[in-house]
Image (cartoon, rainbow, N blue to C red; front, side):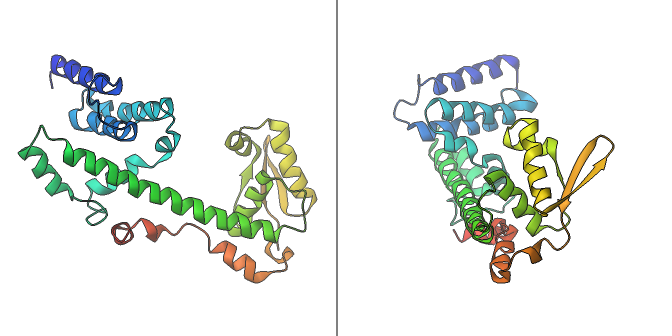
Length: 246
């Protein structure tokens, strides 16, 4: 692609983003098309995919569509590219789509249809995650109801500790993950150590926290614990078979 052609394509994309073209396109569809426009035309050579995602996210935020910015769009597009998402989850597999685009290069119907359908797949992935974690949090609250003083961050730590006996935690990661001050992150862990849930170990200047021996036995409802451990998101959900049965 020559620099002149790339500049022209960038002008087309910018005009579309600024609502100078495509006057009848809904904002949701426009956000989806922006990403695919960068993917299809590749005006920025090796960074078109990354810039396209950033532009689409910015557009979604600017037009009060924040959920679009949270969807795993790149992952779903890759799965479709590699044949893991097929009809009836979408209308076209990749070979059929490429044939339609070559036959009618000026007709964007297939592009728009595919973009919308892949976002529906991505939305269902997010819904699956949310449902799994809501169930997990509900069961965890039930298990920890005897200690009403635990905050959400501490429940998150204990949830992982209960599911993975080899889990390891650091104050720095906890601080950055939750956007809290270092003293707050440190206090979260020290309170759990005081309660006997975690064990503290110093390596050099850093402190590491691991689940206490017999942590699971501290909770008196083994059936609830078994359900909690089963709420890990099932990776088979993302296999082609599950995609295509949605």
